[in-house]
Image (cartoon, rainbow, N blue to C red; front, side, top):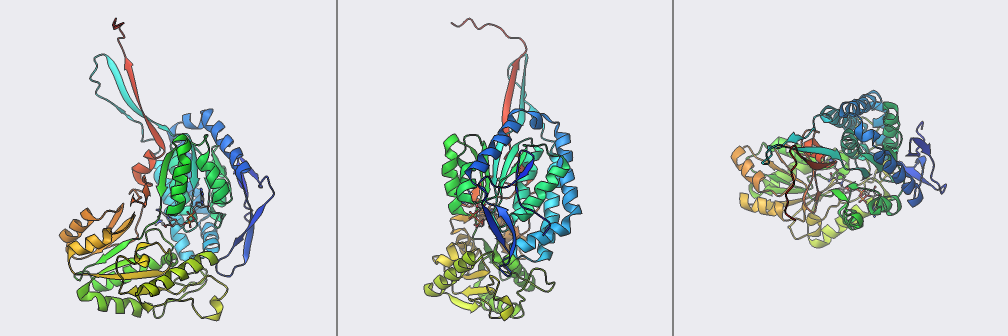
Amino acid sequence: MNLKPQHYINGKWVDAKSGKTRDIINPFNQEVIVTAPEGDETDTKEAIAAAREAFDNGEWSSTPATERGAIVRKIAEFIERDREELAELESLDTGKTVEESRGDMDDIAGVFRYYAEIADKNGGEMIASPVPDSVSKVVHEPVGVCGQITPWNYPLLQASWKLAPALATGNTLIMKPSEITPLTTVKVFQLMEEAGVPAGVANLVLGAGSTVGAELSSSLDVDLISFTGGIVTGKKIMQAASVNVKKLALELGGKNPNIIFADADFDIAVDQALNGVFFHAGQICSAGTRLIVEESIHDEFVNALVERLKNFKLGSGFDEDTQMGPLISAEHLAKVEEYVEKGKKEGATLAVGGSRPEAPELQDGFFYLPTIFTDCTTDMHIVQEEAFGPVITVEKFQTEEEAVKTANDSIYGLAGGVWTNDSVKAERCAAKMRMGTVWINEFNLYFPHAPWGGYKQSGIGRELGKLGIEEYTETKHIFQNLKPAAMNWF
Ligand SMILES: NC(=O)c1ccc[n+]([C@@H]2O[C@H](COP(=O)([O-])OP(=O)(O)OC[C@H]3O[C@@H](n4cnc5c(N)ncnc54)[C@H](O)[C@@H]3O)[C@@H](O)[C@H]2O)c1
Ligand SMILES: C[N+](C)(C)CC=O
């Protein structure tokens, strides 16, 4: 391993002040890939101070947006240059297939390119002032010092959604990746340094959420927290952030419905229902784990799903024929197992899977078989809670209204899908589905130009698209009276 994980604070690569370290584990075989510094509050405070100073001295925020955009574009170019190395690091760290990781790297470069292009197109606007002889204008300014906290499932992808717009708009930042999967984030900070991001503007602290993450969330010197992760953590961060009324962007979990009407293209819907869940072993916030299938095709649809899983290939993300890698950790595997046991107890029927695989070559990794439950009802825990694993629940419906009502019966509202050849029906459903993204005859597609985020408890705010820029800017109204005069009121 060429990469030496370290904190990056004020333009310097450093170890944890305490000297503590953490082993980074390969989820395919539990081998230690590398050792990373285990930061704590002390390291975090130092990084916050660096970001504060870099913001308050105004150099970065007053750098012309075109120049900031050029640096962000260089980062995209370096990611493209080092695509293979980054993809392999991501797969080593997360267990996902290298093919998936390559796709992630292309998406990530695309995100940096997108924000590079729009960096200098956020110039504000003139207002038609109702006051004679005056100038009234609206300008957009960076928020300030941003704390950015990311999860382990799409480590660099989620980081890119935060880094690119924050840099493009002139903020300074401290990023805390998941302590389980920091490798590609470390590498991208090296690329950011190479691209010319000035010292202190982008800082990286590695370590746990309870120390580094909590310090970022509660610091009086941090102006915004952008968090992607679980709902329980999101609520803690929201509470901590209230200390100075920080701006908050929360991208939380999902339990995403995928409605299959009888008039959908059957084979495509089956194929995409599998893709919608089993990429990265179901460890996707927007995984379509909640299938809602029209009763008249239910049995045939479930049989087709089960049939397709018969030759499913679990294995190393580095083997070309692997379709699904391991789960991220022993703890997470135990959580998925517990969830499946709960489903059995609740009366759902196991159509396939429901255990760890028996193959001897998979015993060192955190593998779990693709699993489908039928006879599910909306009130079951397995239907309502995010297992974040390769587990599908299937519910039935008879009418369009029932399908939409079932889909909306959730505390979450991240994403959902509708499969039908009746586009008017599809639009009707999409209009009523209470989610940040609705796909029609598609699932799990995202790109930099369209906003991403959740309704209800799936979060606050939006990443990507133009709204992704707005998260990182304050809006100011500047009014100038060109003919000031006394009022003589007092
Ligand atoms: N909405 C989205 O776009 C999106 C994308 C990816 C993942 N997710 C969600 O992320 C979750 C899986 O990720 P995870 O297990 O890493 O989530 P998590 O909430 O356990 O951890 C996420 C990050 O928060 C940090 N953290 C933990 N406790 C903290 C605290 N008290 N204060 C501050 N930071 C703290 C962790 O160290 C990690 O970096 C799932 O719920 C998934 O749906 C959502
Ligand atoms: C947002 N997304 C779909 C890239 C990853 C969610 O876990």
